[in-house]
Length: 538
View 1 (cartoon, rainbow, N blue to C red):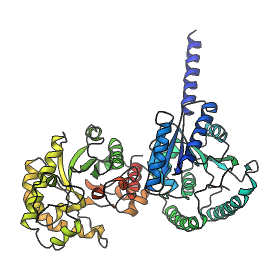
View 2: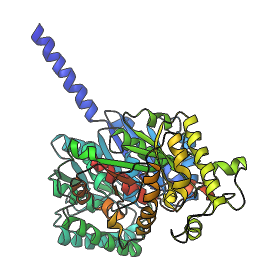
View 3: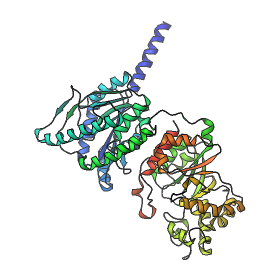
View 4: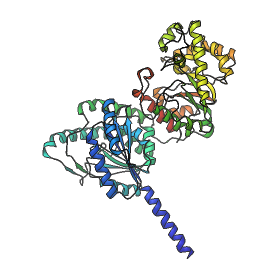
């Protein structure tokens, strides 16, 4: 009897595990297309309801031009807002199919991840067939339109369009096979199924945001030894509503393939050892700009919860500083600081009318402040410094009133390094409990535009020491380091003392949605920073 109960428990456990493994998230990267996408989502839901034996969700990632994205998203929300099977996501930056899939992946929850083109041009029986192949040990299953058993159904009027795309695909595939040694005869088929583990690895390495993202997927599987299978598909064309423009795509693809070849030659798709506990403790990664947008906050919170980010700098006058703030404060061991802001949005002193016309009566553009300091050679004017001191106090107290325990300060665009500011605000900073700051002393910036910050920091260093403020050795990662992620990790592993490293991550680019006075030019590149940092947690 006991043996029978034990066997029954094992069978029940295996059955439950099998059902969990069948849980499916389908991501649709949908260029804003109005009512067209509504019908396709309904068709997909109907099919899954009848044929998929497990939980499922459809993540619709609307992307494209801002106005059209809003319009299409509103139509989808009106139709599916009450349907728990549908997850809606707006993606604005960076542009490209790969980038849209990357940000939408963070909205998914299940163990199997599928990608499918928005026009659903395939027989959906692929999903169940591919799931069986995953059960047999494959990490990635792709559709292959060039296998002998694949079929195409379309009206004869669409033959010219399909033929052009077919020829382009053959040419592209031959180039890819020659450049990278990839053996797949169809690298661009618009339907795929993979494990969540492989999808996570893919997006942690993905830096090709457009049409060629598929190549990066195959390079990763090739480099890390993941099993890839291709199976026949039935292609069903009933319209000519493709968003692919072959001429422009040829130019973009050429640039992408050069970029991917460079990454492969640098070993970016090879396995790498994770950082050790002691190495990770030396990385005092500080994330700037909390509050500038929801996607920025979401990215910082995720990385803080993973233990990658150790310090978060909050903009007290930002529009979104309260979004997820309670969750951030609950993260064990996180340090919070003031990201003192004089150059973005409406300053707190302006709202109360305390600032002077020859001071900070208006938000100061960064270049104007730099010019007034004679590029770091002259102390700022007394009226301006008086308003800066008052604004600093207002911003610190505004955060403290929200229950934020501050332990340091830095600043947006590093304005605290301009001559005279540290001397003016340091006594108040220490009185308010902020005895630590930042000096941008990273000599690898030599020859880069940011090297001016080293000059400002040298000028501010004496003031910092006079005031008794503390600071850490500093590193300012650049775009190349966030793109070559394995190489960057090897560089970080060589650090021998606690070092501050600044970053500006976001789950996707949403700064286009901000009012004009709060906009910021650094948008889509924040996504690359997020995934480079996410990669450090693995």
